[in-house]
Length: 271
Image (cartoon, rainbow, N blue to C red):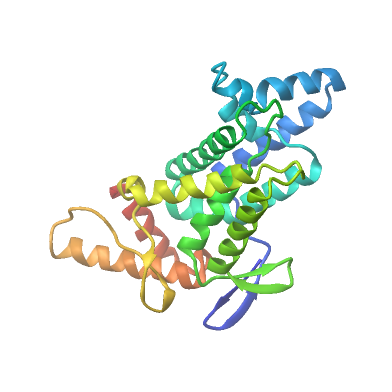
């Protein structure tokens, strides 16, 4: 992934792994390997039991499927691209939001994607598998948090994060309307983005996270610290955190000094 700062284009292999992203990667990969070691018949039985089957999940109250389906994948490349996106986009979001808020958002978007798929595929016996609903939720959050960040599409074409998210959203919407037979749960992807947006818009995150993105001048992400800190030092601290969050939006977490990182961690503990 590439991103542009004031000094031009910087290339990197992604942000450092956070503890939650690392755990999610380990669980997804372990489950995939475990299923590969099973005989084909047993593997199919587990997928039918743990995958999200619209005919069973709500009508038969197999509610665990709304969680377990996120940890199953249809093949190596399905797993690879989901885990790659989880690393590339999720790691920086986790560092900014913190473990608990990140994990809450991940499951809200994953559950939302599964629910959307069930409601749009009512009665289907085809199990849905994969973390794509949650991944598309992370894509949406990344586009809101870092709208001007440059991403290398297909590792070649530079595109701003906000247009990258919009492009994928439009593609999924068109694919879902065509009811394509490609075996991909496009409505789950759209549901992950929709529930992610609703969750962010509803205000729940403001109670847990020190910053919240909104539209600012020139399309730049703006952040606001929420809390009833006393005037004086408290007001200055909020201004300082705003400045740091602006810097993250422009240049990424890796640009922060040790002092700025400590200020941000302190703000997260207070809010």
